[in-house]
Length: 251
Image (cartoon, rainbow, N blue to C red):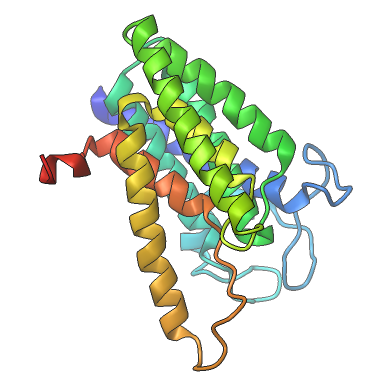
């Protein structure tokens, strides 16, 4: 029974991730996100229904488009596996409790924000607002008491203020302003894991940033833009699902 539940949730997450990929690709382009055939990125030919089956179509086709034989990016199947895995982790963490569906919606919106940030280095306001609202509701429902929620809310405000301060004092060079409300929503979503998640985000961002700079040719390291939303999402979710606490090493 557990295997069937997890398999169903993984499949659901993969399907949702596939739809999110369409939304992110069409957002602010004038194309409808609900209608219109998906097309091959290489030759623009309409994709068959089989080509749209999450993960399976990529594996069965050997990573190549049926219409033209062009190589297909791993981008889509990886995001489908990622969200499918997150859906399973949410169930393991929460079960079918009151916050279960809200958490699924939250991580789905978070994936959309991360994908859009990776593509455009900006977080769309509507998606960001939706995430913060749903995350706040999820955090409120998940909290064991009202006082616990308000403690989390206070920590979230401190995180919001610190990132906003980094943005304004650096005049936007160090961080975009939209990362601040994203971190605010993530803090509300993860509750007691908010501070560890915040720290993990900066640790992960620092490591990835150093690797990115190290791979660039000497003399071409200025003006490197690295989206911070993926690091925030990874750090907060890592702390939430593992309950690792970096403060334990210094106490």
